[in-house]
Image (cartoon, rainbow over all chains, first blue to last red; front, side, top):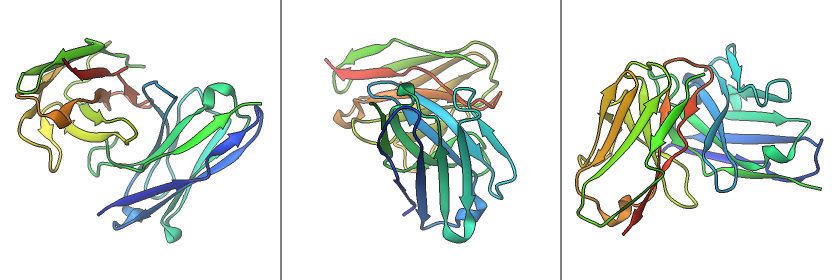
Length: 120
Length: 108
């Protein structure tokens, strides 16, 4: 069974930084595009960032451009999200999601999420 | 950016009834639309992709239709486990990938 396990969330002050990680297992990670998607408490889903299987193509939502950095290490089956200059509105559960192969944009497997809380 | 508008915001039905959920796009997305189900405390689950294709393991009572700007998710006969929040998502004009605001399907 495909597994995605996020970690790295926590309570951070405004302006602070965190590095989120997502470890993948039971599939060939290096062949898959990946997304980060977030969900503020009681709110809907918001796409955050995308990275191609090789890591050469990267996209960000306007709301995080310049503050967040997505990366991956295919040797370690890991996806990362470096989040800087955190704001209260970044408070959310952050999910890593595997892109449905051949249908770029859709996500067929999701992790259980890691909660980031930005508060003083 | 493509804006997806879902209706109704909340749908109250009983088990065994038919559910019809709507998603309207601000511009044509062809058939590049997916539906997800999310239960409390869980991650979303892909139900339908490219408007009408069921994802692996999704029961036949779930069906999707539509193209262009108007899409529908139909659950033919509601089971107790179907009460959840449903989101549509487009991949036609991205980035950004965009989601609808969700429809909450609750037990009447």
